[in-house]
Image (cartoon, rainbow, N blue to C red; front, side, top):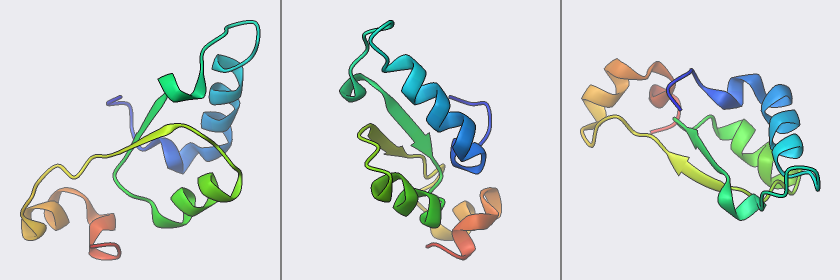
Length: 78
């Protein structure tokens, strides 16, 4: 967490999830949480790809005007 928006690096995030969840490492998908500001098309792609992980939406503010200032993508996806 705190290293940028993971869904803007979708391919590598999926590789990491696959690696973490491999038999070699033994982690369950249910122990993995992906935090995002809400990149709508990539969230849909996660569902389409049947990626079963926990999803956390990081809003940064409950006030929409403050959130729009902090996270420009929120102007497209309120």
